[in-house]
Image (cartoon, rainbow, N blue to C red; front, side):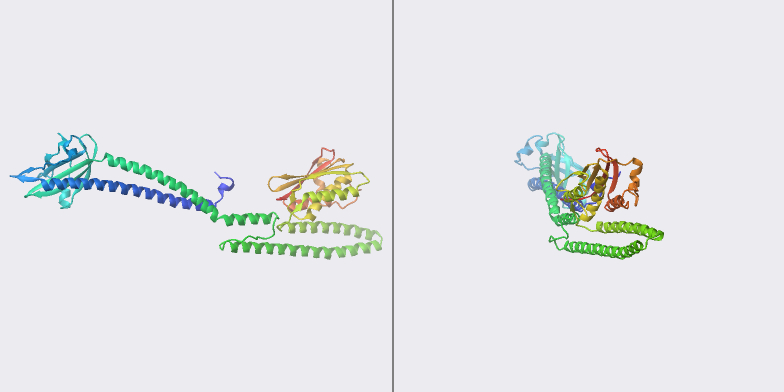
Length: 460
Protein backbone atom coordinates (compact mmCIF):
# COMPACT_ATOMS: atom_id res chain seq x y z
CA UNK A 1 0.00 0.00 0.00
CA UNK A 2 1.46 3.30 -1.05
CA UNK A 3 1.45 6.06 1.58
CA UNK A 4 0.37 9.35 0.02
CA UNK A 5 1.76 12.78 0.66
CA UNK A 6 4.64 13.77 2.89
CA UNK A 7 4.59 10.52 4.87
CA UNK A 8 5.85 8.63 1.82
CA UNK A 9 8.91 10.89 1.50
CA UNK A 10 12.06 10.51 3.61
CA UNK A 11 12.45 13.23 6.23
CA UNK A 12 15.83 14.41 7.47
CA UNK A 13 14.32 15.70 10.72
CA UNK A 14 12.42 12.46 11.32
CA UNK A 15 15.55 10.44 10.57
CA UNK A 16 17.66 12.43 13.03
CA UNK A 17 14.98 12.23 15.72
CA UNK A 18 14.51 8.48 15.29
CA UNK A 19 18.25 7.79 15.34
CA UNK A 20 18.77 9.88 18.47
CA UNK A 21 15.72 8.34 20.11
CA UNK A 22 16.92 4.85 19.22
CA UNK A 23 20.30 5.10 20.89
CA UNK A 24 18.95 7.21 23.80
CA UNK A 25 16.17 4.76 24.65
CA UNK A 26 18.53 1.80 24.23
CA UNK A 27 21.01 3.44 26.60
CA UNK A 28 18.25 4.16 29.13
CA UNK A 29 16.96 0.58 29.03
CA UNK A 30 20.45 -0.87 29.41
CA UNK A 31 21.23 1.54 32.25
CA UNK A 32 17.97 0.65 34.04
CA UNK A 33 18.63 -3.09 33.73
CA UNK A 34 22.23 -2.71 34.92
CA UNK A 35 21.16 -0.58 37.90
CA UNK A 36 18.47 -3.11 38.88
CA UNK A 37 20.98 -5.98 38.67
CA UNK A 38 23.56 -4.02 40.68
CA UNK A 39 20.99 -3.18 43.35
CA UNK A 40 19.92 -6.82 43.60
CA UNK A 41 23.52 -7.95 43.79
CA UNK A 42 24.32 -5.40 46.51
CA UNK A 43 21.27 -6.51 48.53
CA UNK A 44 22.27 -10.16 48.25
CA UNK A 45 25.82 -9.31 49.26
CA UNK A 46 24.53 -7.62 52.41
CA UNK A 47 22.51 -10.75 53.28
CA UNK A 48 25.50 -12.98 52.49
CA UNK A 49 27.62 -10.82 54.79
CA UNK A 50 25.07 -11.19 57.61
CA UNK A 51 24.93 -14.94 57.10
CA UNK A 52 28.72 -15.08 56.99
CA UNK A 53 28.91 -13.35 60.38
CA UNK A 54 26.39 -15.86 61.80
CA UNK A 55 28.44 -18.78 60.47
CA UNK A 56 31.64 -17.27 61.86
CA UNK A 57 30.05 -17.13 65.32
CA UNK A 58 28.94 -20.74 64.98
CA UNK A 59 32.35 -21.83 63.75
CA UNK A 60 34.33 -20.02 66.42
CA UNK A 61 32.16 -21.13 69.32
CA UNK A 62 31.34 -24.72 68.35
CA UNK A 63 33.19 -27.52 70.12
CA UNK A 64 33.83 -31.22 69.60
CA UNK A 65 33.94 -33.57 72.57
CA UNK A 66 34.57 -37.30 72.12
CA UNK A 67 33.50 -36.98 68.45
CA UNK A 68 30.26 -35.15 69.25
CA UNK A 69 29.68 -31.60 68.02
CA UNK A 70 28.20 -29.03 70.41
CA UNK A 71 26.73 -25.75 69.16
CA UNK A 72 27.25 -22.48 71.05
CA UNK A 73 24.47 -20.80 72.97
CA UNK A 74 23.78 -17.89 70.57
CA UNK A 75 21.60 -14.97 71.64
CA UNK A 76 20.10 -14.27 68.20
CA UNK A 77 16.39 -13.88 69.03
CA UNK A 78 15.26 -14.64 65.46
CA UNK A 79 17.08 -17.97 65.52
CA UNK A 80 15.27 -18.83 68.80
CA UNK A 81 11.77 -18.07 67.41
CA UNK A 82 10.02 -20.79 65.36
CA UNK A 83 9.81 -20.06 61.62
CA UNK A 84 11.17 -16.55 62.14
CA UNK A 85 12.91 -16.48 58.78
CA UNK A 86 16.48 -16.91 60.07
CA UNK A 87 17.82 -20.46 60.32
CA UNK A 88 21.09 -22.32 60.82
CA UNK A 89 22.27 -25.92 60.81
CA UNK A 90 25.49 -27.71 61.72
CA UNK A 91 25.98 -30.86 59.64
CA UNK A 92 28.58 -33.35 58.56
CA UNK A 93 29.18 -34.85 55.12
CA UNK A 94 28.27 -38.48 54.56
CA UNK A 95 30.39 -40.95 52.57
CA UNK A 96 27.95 -40.77 49.64
CA UNK A 97 28.37 -36.99 49.35
CA UNK A 98 25.19 -35.99 51.19
CA UNK A 99 24.77 -33.68 54.16
CA UNK A 100 23.61 -35.03 57.53
CA UNK A 101 22.24 -32.45 60.02
CA UNK A 102 23.60 -32.68 63.55
CA UNK A 103 22.43 -29.49 65.29
CA UNK A 104 19.84 -26.96 64.09
CA UNK A 105 18.38 -23.69 65.29
CA UNK A 106 15.13 -23.55 67.26
CA UNK A 107 13.64 -21.50 64.43
CA UNK A 108 13.59 -24.58 62.19
CA UNK A 109 11.44 -26.36 64.78
CA UNK A 110 10.95 -29.83 63.30
CA UNK A 111 12.03 -28.91 59.75
CA UNK A 112 15.33 -29.24 57.94
CA UNK A 113 17.32 -26.57 56.12
CA UNK A 114 17.61 -27.83 52.53
CA UNK A 115 21.08 -28.16 51.06
CA UNK A 116 22.01 -28.56 47.40
CA UNK A 117 22.62 -32.20 46.44
CA UNK A 118 26.04 -31.27 45.05
CA UNK A 119 27.10 -29.15 48.01
CA UNK A 120 29.96 -31.44 49.07
CA UNK A 121 31.18 -31.67 45.49
CA UNK A 122 31.20 -27.87 45.23
CA UNK A 123 33.29 -27.62 48.39
CA UNK A 124 35.80 -30.08 46.94
CA UNK A 125 35.92 -28.16 43.67
CA UNK A 126 36.64 -24.88 45.50
CA UNK A 127 38.31 -25.64 48.80
CA UNK A 128 38.02 -22.96 51.46
CA UNK A 129 35.37 -21.00 49.53
CA UNK A 130 31.85 -20.52 50.95
CA UNK A 131 28.85 -21.55 48.83
CA UNK A 132 25.81 -19.24 48.45
CA UNK A 133 22.54 -20.51 47.03
CA UNK A 134 18.79 -19.92 46.97
CA UNK A 135 16.37 -22.38 48.54
CA UNK A 136 12.95 -22.68 50.17
CA UNK A 137 12.16 -22.44 53.90
CA UNK A 138 9.87 -24.48 56.16
CA UNK A 139 6.83 -22.39 55.22
CA UNK A 140 7.65 -22.31 51.50
CA UNK A 141 9.20 -18.84 51.74
CA UNK A 142 12.24 -18.04 49.55
CA UNK A 143 15.54 -18.20 51.40
CA UNK A 144 19.05 -16.97 50.77
CA UNK A 145 21.50 -19.53 52.21
CA UNK A 146 25.25 -19.74 52.78
CA UNK A 147 27.36 -22.81 53.58
CA UNK A 148 30.93 -23.11 54.86
CA UNK A 149 33.09 -26.26 55.14
CA UNK A 150 35.47 -26.53 58.09
CA UNK A 151 37.30 -29.09 60.22
CA UNK A 152 37.03 -29.06 64.00
CA UNK A 153 39.64 -31.22 65.74
CA UNK A 154 39.88 -33.42 62.66
CA UNK A 155 36.12 -33.70 62.20
CA UNK A 156 34.59 -32.43 58.91
CA UNK A 157 31.79 -30.00 59.65
CA UNK A 158 29.45 -28.01 57.38
CA UNK A 159 27.84 -24.84 58.74
CA UNK A 160 24.66 -23.67 56.97
CA UNK A 161 22.77 -20.42 57.61
CA UNK A 162 19.77 -18.96 55.76
CA UNK A 163 17.53 -15.90 55.85
CA UNK A 164 14.24 -15.13 54.23
CA UNK A 165 14.73 -13.07 51.08
CA UNK A 166 11.16 -11.78 50.60
CA UNK A 167 12.24 -8.40 51.94
CA UNK A 168 15.11 -8.31 49.46
CA UNK A 169 12.88 -9.27 46.53
CA UNK A 170 10.34 -6.63 47.53
CA UNK A 171 13.05 -3.98 47.80
CA UNK A 172 14.38 -4.96 44.39
CA UNK A 173 10.88 -4.74 42.88
CA UNK A 174 10.31 -1.32 44.42
CA UNK A 175 13.68 -0.17 43.15
CA UNK A 176 12.86 -1.41 39.65
CA UNK A 177 9.48 0.36 39.69
CA UNK A 178 10.91 3.66 40.90
CA UNK A 179 13.87 3.38 38.54
CA UNK A 180 11.55 2.64 35.61
CA UNK A 181 9.42 5.67 36.49
CA UNK A 182 12.45 7.93 36.83
CA UNK A 183 13.92 6.67 33.55
CA UNK A 184 10.55 7.09 31.82
CA UNK A 185 10.50 10.75 32.89
CA UNK A 186 14.11 11.08 31.79
CA UNK A 187 13.22 9.45 28.46
CA UNK A 188 10.33 11.88 27.94
CA UNK A 189 12.67 14.76 28.67
CA UNK A 190 15.23 13.35 26.25
CA UNK A 191 12.58 13.00 23.54
CA UNK A 192 11.54 16.62 23.98
CA UNK A 193 15.18 17.75 24.05
CA UNK A 194 16.01 15.75 20.92
CA UNK A 195 13.03 17.14 19.01
CA UNK A 196 13.93 20.70 20.05
CA UNK A 197 17.58 20.10 19.18
CA UNK A 198 16.72 18.79 15.72
CA UNK A 199 14.28 21.62 15.06
CA UNK A 200 16.80 24.23 16.19
CA UNK A 201 19.63 22.52 14.32
CA UNK A 202 17.63 22.33 11.08
CA UNK A 203 16.21 25.84 11.39
CA UNK A 204 18.64 27.23 8.78
CA UNK A 205 17.46 24.52 6.35
CA UNK A 206 13.83 25.49 6.90
CA UNK A 207 14.79 29.16 6.49
CA UNK A 208 16.52 28.31 3.20
CA UNK A 209 13.40 26.48 2.04
CA UNK A 210 11.19 29.49 2.85
CA UNK A 211 13.55 31.89 1.08
CA UNK A 212 13.72 29.71 -2.05
CA UNK A 213 9.90 29.59 -2.02
CA UNK A 214 9.86 33.39 -1.74
CA UNK A 215 12.12 33.60 -4.81
CA UNK A 216 9.85 31.24 -6.72
CA UNK A 217 6.77 33.27 -5.78
CA UNK A 218 8.32 36.53 -6.84
CA UNK A 219 8.75 38.17 -3.44
CA UNK A 220 12.54 38.41 -3.70
CA UNK A 221 15.05 37.92 -6.50
CA UNK A 222 17.98 36.36 -4.62
CA UNK A 223 18.74 34.54 -1.35
CA UNK A 224 19.76 37.20 1.14
CA UNK A 225 19.91 35.58 4.60
CA UNK A 226 23.15 34.59 6.32
CA UNK A 227 23.46 30.84 6.79
CA UNK A 228 25.81 28.56 8.75
CA UNK A 229 29.08 27.45 7.19
CA UNK A 230 27.65 24.08 6.14
CA UNK A 231 24.74 25.65 4.21
CA UNK A 232 26.42 28.77 2.83
CA UNK A 233 27.88 26.93 -0.23
CA UNK A 234 24.40 25.64 -1.11
CA UNK A 235 22.90 29.12 -0.84
CA UNK A 236 25.69 30.53 -3.01
CA UNK A 237 25.16 27.83 -5.64
CA UNK A 238 21.42 28.55 -5.68
CA UNK A 239 22.09 32.25 -6.20
CA UNK A 240 24.51 31.39 -8.99
CA UNK A 241 21.87 29.14 -10.56
CA UNK A 242 19.28 31.93 -10.36
CA UNK A 243 21.70 34.38 -11.98
CA UNK A 244 22.52 31.87 -14.73
CA UNK A 245 18.83 31.19 -15.33
CA UNK A 246 18.03 34.88 -15.55
CA UNK A 247 20.95 35.41 -17.93
CA UNK A 248 19.70 32.55 -20.10
CA UNK A 249 16.18 34.00 -20.21
CA UNK A 250 17.49 37.44 -21.11
CA UNK A 251 19.62 35.91 -23.86
CA UNK A 252 16.56 34.08 -25.23
CA UNK A 253 14.58 37.30 -25.21
CA UNK A 254 17.36 39.06 -27.10
CA UNK A 255 17.43 36.29 -29.71
CA UNK A 256 13.64 36.48 -30.04
CA UNK A 257 13.81 40.25 -30.51
CA UNK A 258 16.54 39.93 -33.10
CA UNK A 259 14.53 37.29 -34.95
CA UNK A 260 11.45 39.52 -34.90
CA UNK A 261 13.40 42.40 -36.36
CA UNK A 262 15.08 40.19 -38.97
CA UNK A 263 11.76 38.72 -40.21
CA UNK A 264 9.49 41.74 -39.98
CA UNK A 265 11.70 43.98 -42.06
CA UNK A 266 11.64 41.75 -45.21
CA UNK A 267 7.89 41.20 -44.81
CA UNK A 268 7.30 44.95 -44.58
CA UNK A 269 9.39 45.46 -47.73
CA UNK A 270 7.33 42.81 -49.56
CA UNK A 271 4.04 44.46 -48.52
CA UNK A 272 5.31 47.89 -49.57
CA UNK A 273 6.49 46.69 -52.98
CA UNK A 274 3.21 44.81 -53.57
CA UNK A 275 1.20 47.92 -52.69
CA UNK A 276 3.20 49.99 -55.18
CA UNK A 277 2.67 47.47 -58.01
CA UNK A 278 -0.99 46.52 -58.00
CA UNK A 279 -2.13 43.47 -59.88
CA UNK A 280 -3.06 39.79 -59.35
CA UNK A 281 0.48 38.86 -58.33
CA UNK A 282 0.68 41.77 -55.90
CA UNK A 283 -2.60 40.70 -54.29
CA UNK A 284 -1.28 37.16 -53.77
CA UNK A 285 2.00 38.50 -52.37
CA UNK A 286 0.17 40.89 -50.04
CA UNK A 287 -2.18 38.21 -48.77
CA UNK A 288 0.59 35.71 -48.14
CA UNK A 289 2.85 38.35 -46.56
CA UNK A 290 0.05 39.31 -44.14
CA UNK A 291 -0.35 35.64 -43.27
CA UNK A 292 3.42 35.37 -42.75
CA UNK A 293 3.37 38.43 -40.48
CA UNK A 294 0.57 36.94 -38.40
CA UNK A 295 2.37 33.63 -38.12
CA UNK A 296 5.62 35.35 -37.14
CA UNK A 297 3.82 37.39 -34.47
CA UNK A 298 2.14 34.24 -33.17
CA UNK A 299 5.33 32.19 -32.86
CA UNK A 300 7.34 35.07 -31.47
CA UNK A 301 4.78 35.62 -28.72
CA UNK A 302 4.83 31.92 -27.95
CA UNK A 303 8.62 31.88 -27.80
CA UNK A 304 8.67 34.92 -25.52
CA UNK A 305 6.10 33.32 -23.23
CA UNK A 306 8.10 30.09 -23.04
CA UNK A 307 11.23 32.06 -22.18
CA UNK A 308 9.43 34.05 -19.51
CA UNK A 309 8.01 30.99 -17.81
CA UNK A 310 11.57 29.81 -17.24
CA UNK A 311 12.28 32.90 -15.18
CA UNK A 312 11.59 33.33 -11.48
CA UNK A 313 10.43 36.25 -9.39
CA UNK A 314 7.93 37.76 -11.88
CA UNK A 315 4.45 38.62 -10.61
CA UNK A 316 1.74 40.99 -11.79
CA UNK A 317 -1.23 42.52 -9.99
CA UNK A 318 -4.42 41.23 -11.66
CA UNK A 319 -6.44 44.15 -10.33
CA UNK A 320 -4.18 46.74 -11.94
CA UNK A 321 -4.24 44.97 -15.33
CA UNK A 322 -8.05 44.60 -15.34
CA UNK A 323 -8.51 48.24 -14.36
CA UNK A 324 -6.21 49.41 -17.15
CA UNK A 325 -7.88 47.19 -19.77
CA UNK A 326 -11.39 48.15 -18.66
CA UNK A 327 -10.66 51.88 -18.92
CA UNK A 328 -8.99 51.52 -22.33
CA UNK A 329 -11.68 49.29 -23.87
CA UNK A 330 -14.57 51.41 -22.55
CA UNK A 331 -13.03 54.42 -24.30
CA UNK A 332 -12.49 52.46 -27.52
CA UNK A 333 -16.08 51.11 -27.57
CA UNK A 334 -17.76 54.17 -26.10
CA UNK A 335 -19.93 54.49 -29.22
CA UNK A 336 -21.54 51.13 -28.37
CA UNK A 337 -21.95 52.14 -24.75
CA UNK A 338 -20.13 49.04 -23.53
CA UNK A 339 -19.96 48.74 -19.75
CA UNK A 340 -17.29 46.46 -18.28
CA UNK A 341 -18.08 45.06 -14.85
CA UNK A 342 -14.90 43.62 -13.40
CA UNK A 343 -13.83 42.40 -9.98
CA UNK A 344 -10.52 41.15 -8.57
CA UNK A 345 -9.02 41.06 -5.09
CA UNK A 346 -6.26 43.56 -4.48
CA UNK A 347 -3.96 40.79 -3.21
CA UNK A 348 -4.40 38.54 -6.27
CA UNK A 349 -1.23 38.24 -8.35
CA UNK A 350 -0.42 36.45 -11.59
CA UNK A 351 2.92 34.61 -11.58
CA UNK A 352 4.28 35.96 -14.81
CA UNK A 353 5.00 39.16 -16.69
CA UNK A 354 2.60 42.05 -17.02
CA UNK A 355 2.75 42.08 -20.83
CA UNK A 356 1.71 38.43 -20.99
CA UNK A 357 -1.26 38.99 -18.69
CA UNK A 358 -2.30 42.02 -20.74
CA UNK A 359 -2.31 39.87 -23.85
CA UNK A 360 -3.99 36.86 -22.21
CA UNK A 361 -6.87 38.93 -20.77
CA UNK A 362 -6.89 41.78 -23.29
CA UNK A 363 -7.79 39.68 -26.35
CA UNK A 364 -10.85 37.98 -24.75
CA UNK A 365 -12.04 41.28 -23.25
CA UNK A 366 -11.68 43.02 -26.62
CA UNK A 367 -13.61 40.23 -28.33
CA UNK A 368 -16.30 40.44 -25.66
CA UNK A 369 -16.62 44.19 -26.23
CA UNK A 370 -16.66 43.69 -30.01
CA UNK A 371 -19.31 40.94 -30.09
CA UNK A 372 -21.31 41.83 -26.97
CA UNK A 373 -24.23 44.22 -26.99
CA UNK A 374 -23.42 46.40 -24.03
CA UNK A 375 -22.39 44.27 -21.03
CA UNK A 376 -19.07 42.58 -20.31
CA UNK A 377 -18.34 40.89 -16.97
CA UNK A 378 -14.85 39.91 -15.82
CA UNK A 379 -14.07 38.03 -12.60
CA UNK A 380 -10.70 36.96 -11.17
CA UNK A 381 -10.61 34.48 -8.26
CA UNK A 382 -8.22 32.22 -6.43
CA UNK A 383 -8.26 28.51 -7.26
CA UNK A 384 -6.46 26.32 -4.75
CA UNK A 385 -3.10 27.24 -3.32
CA UNK A 386 -1.23 28.23 -6.48
CA UNK A 387 -3.76 28.91 -9.25
CA UNK A 388 -6.17 31.68 -10.27
CA UNK A 389 -9.13 31.70 -12.64
CA UNK A 390 -10.21 34.53 -14.94
CA UNK A 391 -13.70 34.48 -16.46
CA UNK A 392 -14.80 36.84 -19.26
CA UNK A 393 -18.50 36.96 -20.25
CA UNK A 394 -20.56 39.03 -22.66
CA UNK A 395 -24.20 39.41 -23.68
CA UNK A 396 -23.57 38.86 -27.38
CA UNK A 397 -24.76 36.09 -29.70
CA UNK A 398 -22.28 33.57 -28.23
CA UNK A 399 -20.86 30.56 -30.06
CA UNK A 400 -22.38 27.16 -30.80
CA UNK A 401 -20.62 24.25 -29.03
CA UNK A 402 -19.23 22.90 -32.29
CA UNK A 403 -17.46 26.20 -33.03
CA UNK A 404 -15.78 26.71 -29.67
CA UNK A 405 -12.79 24.51 -30.30
CA UNK A 406 -12.44 25.99 -33.76
CA UNK A 407 -11.87 29.57 -32.55
CA UNK A 408 -8.92 28.47 -30.42
CA UNK A 409 -7.09 27.08 -33.43
CA UNK A 410 -4.45 29.24 -35.05
CA UNK A 411 -5.87 31.53 -37.77
CA UNK A 412 -9.45 30.30 -37.36
CA UNK A 413 -12.20 32.91 -37.96
CA UNK A 414 -15.87 31.98 -37.78
CA UNK A 415 -16.86 35.35 -39.24
CA UNK A 416 -14.71 36.06 -42.28
CA UNK A 417 -16.31 39.49 -42.69
CA UNK A 418 -14.98 40.76 -39.39
CA UNK A 419 -11.52 42.35 -39.38
CA UNK A 420 -8.59 40.51 -37.82
CA UNK A 421 -6.18 37.68 -38.47
CA UNK A 422 -7.86 35.03 -36.33
CA UNK A 423 -4.79 34.74 -34.11
CA UNK A 424 -6.04 36.52 -30.97
CA UNK A 425 -7.72 33.63 -29.12
CA UNK A 426 -5.14 31.12 -30.31
CA UNK A 427 -2.41 33.34 -28.83
CA UNK A 428 -4.36 33.44 -25.56
CA UNK A 429 -4.58 29.66 -25.57
CA UNK A 430 -0.88 29.27 -26.39
CA UNK A 431 0.19 31.72 -23.69
CA UNK A 432 -2.04 30.06 -21.08
CA UNK A 433 -0.63 26.65 -21.96
CA UNK A 434 2.91 28.03 -21.80
CA UNK A 435 2.16 28.96 -18.17
CA UNK A 436 0.73 25.53 -17.42
CA UNK A 437 -2.92 26.63 -17.70
CA UNK A 438 -5.74 26.23 -20.17
CA UNK A 439 -8.72 28.01 -21.77
CA UNK A 440 -12.34 26.77 -21.72
CA UNK A 441 -15.39 28.17 -23.50
CA UNK A 442 -19.00 27.81 -22.37
CA UNK A 443 -22.34 29.61 -22.33
CA UNK A 444 -22.60 32.79 -20.29
CA UNK A 445 -25.38 33.65 -17.88
CA UNK A 446 -25.53 37.00 -19.72
CA UNK A 447 -26.58 35.19 -22.89
CA UNK A 448 -23.31 35.27 -24.81
CA UNK A 449 -19.94 33.49 -24.53
CA UNK A 450 -18.02 32.74 -21.33
CA UNK A 451 -14.26 32.17 -21.41
CA UNK A 452 -12.48 30.71 -18.37
CA UNK A 453 -8.68 30.98 -18.22
CA UNK A 454 -6.61 29.04 -15.67
CA UNK A 455 -3.24 30.61 -14.74
CA UNK A 456 -0.57 30.31 -12.02
CA UNK A 457 -1.00 32.53 -8.97
CA UNK A 458 1.78 34.24 -7.02
CA UNK A 459 1.49 34.85 -3.30
CA UNK A 460 0.83 38.37 -2.16
